Image (cartoon, rainbow over all chains, first blue to last red; front, side):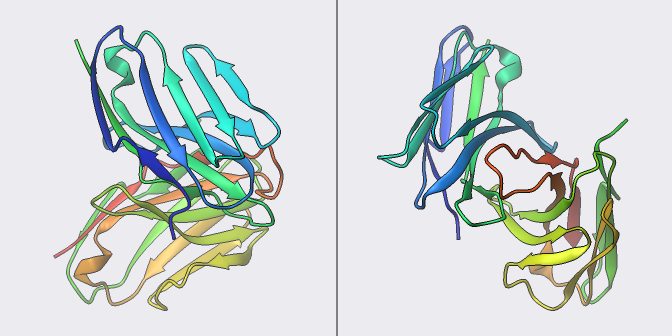
Length: 111
Length: 115
């Protein structure tokens, strides 16, 4: 079963704008991760936030985690055409040994 | 050097055939996975191996048989292929997934088309 649900399923914005994607999950987790998938390619790890962290930054990426609401958000600032891709959140539940993915958000950056 | 490599990248075959997909990782990870991504982009875990031992089998049909000759390799053999098996299959690896720090590294995927 899918652990995470992402919102929105698709997002189209202009280059230079910020993009925000949300992820909700169901069980207690060890960590939550965000991955990017360019068309026809494999997934690339972007950022990992542990269950005891609330916010994390990496370059133009900002991730927040609210374990009370079982939700996370990924913010991409100053978007570029190269950010066009699908973005997936993934979680490892406590006691589990597998990474479970949400259904992804397809982000399109228009030049 | 490619961290996780899988072959072939594309596989077109007829129903009823048997095919294999190979995966190798050079990251020294103990855990390897197979994921299936359907046409709607859902990524679903199929199998997980830790040090050559199966630790997760997500109710995948018996026609799918993973084999791990060593911890750097996890191959996927599929018997009697069906139309519904058409998908992109991803191999991945990670350190111990039970820790709070684990990230997964993915191969480029194998697009399987059953005709």
